[in-house]
Length: 242
Image (cartoon, helix red, strand yellow):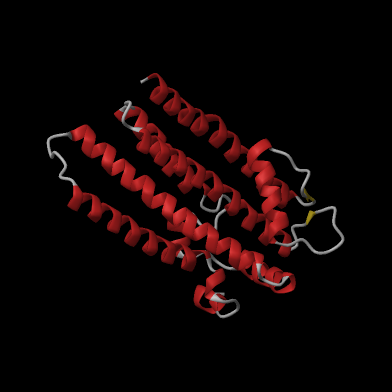
């Protein structure tokens, strides 16, 4: 079944590509407006290469943070308010549909739904600031990098929450110790626990496919928490000692 046909089976607001593209456009407009205001209020020295690199890095981090806030807020409201029966029907359709080219380009629709892209942005922000250097007047840039890493971590959480929801709706069972059918918040709680401590107390995979998704999530979370968070801490330490 083609992408155009599957869109007819659920509202576009539930489509990852649709939400991500509109969120990207909104984040770009907000970021461009902020950059324009800064350009009008202060002239930058074109020969200051490090300063230009720091500003470019800050713009990237601001854009990503705005995108994550818009996209994740929209995703949470859309899926959390959906009736559970309808939510499972939509999730089942989304699990079996073929990812579009935009989804593959953005990292959505795969096992790590958007997680690789999110981790890459966080890595660029943290590593770029470490290379450029942190001085006593760079508190704002450190805060922006911290927000970028936090946004990337939240993107990972929501990405796998959607993954678990769609797997369970498609028959790859994930059981919860509750009487009613699990809702989006239950899969989100499971994703938070796996992302933070690797715990499975919220939900238990009952099939091999679901278990492999949890293993992939655990690996992503371990690398993210061990490497990127450690780099961010080093930035804060560098700011304090600087």
